[in-house]
Image (cartoon, rainbow, N blue to C red):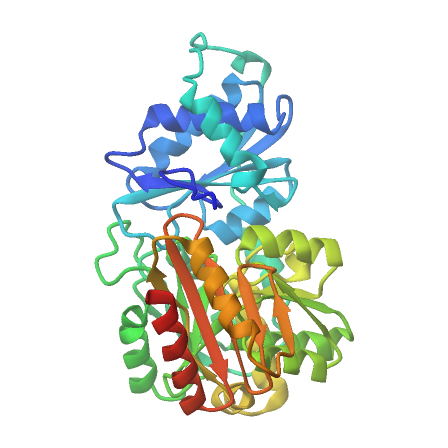
Length: 455
């Protein structure tokens, strides 16, 4: 097993800004990205979020890219959803953000030819080159032969997304931006929605990279407390929406303040898109509920499982020409956006669905809440490979197996329950999910598996 350690991660470069990242490293990241992706003479996009170190790091990335002979478009302050939208107009680029991580972190995400750059497709080679200590360039380097412009894509991004909003009903909703980049993009969206009679109650839209109200990570239940309270105390709310720090993930609450697991959001939006566009492939994270796969099939779609992670799902969706894709972490990949995350698209499709169905969100999602789902449970182990092998030996010997997959770790399905156990890329941890027809069976199977894993 290869564990990706340090600041060079499976899908980005990320670390503590004060001790692990600095402007010199940002400059080298810009240079090595051009070298590794053979991007001399190509046009690259750079954007940054609202963290205190993001703009200085962005400036140095740009300098490094231009020093190695790349042309650069500076998108300035952007969310990651907006960055991906703008990056489709160029050859690739770098987004300076630490996403949902705490305020002391920062990081760098990369895209090239509209595909994410992962550890295996570029970051590992960047790490190797940076650790070799790149030779210094002259002050100007090759910059004189490159072009540089600054461009604002926000109005174009909003116009693009509003094209998918077909409902004319006067919905009301609460949106919690968590002091992240959603406060910027959705802040500009609000008056445009008001023109259509849609009212938004905003929470924590002020940009603040110290995240004074709560961590901008909607997968943590404690970060949804303020949103839930506002949904419950505000009359006539159709839904609540929580955004992460860089606004590429979204989690929804129904009108009763109940959290909708993001795999169930995937199921709802898939139903709407399949009804609107006809049969198609939906790529889903292999951890998604059986209810999601069943809903896709019932609406004429073909569910295709994927290993976990957007760097796996996006290329697979592109390869299969999928109608839609998503995972339980709240990342969604519509065909209309080039399989890039776009939280506004998901919000608007849910509003369209609410309009067409004429039912509250809780009623629409109820049929998908029919199984008992454990959520992902982490266990630290001495040897992840040995643990997976032991679990597979034990459970592959049980009668009645319907499916056994090694797509990502081991996933075994039986008539009334299934489990997925996979390894972390960054630490000696295994991650377990169990789903069953009943809460009692889920709890029993979960506890049996955890006893074996941790024993």
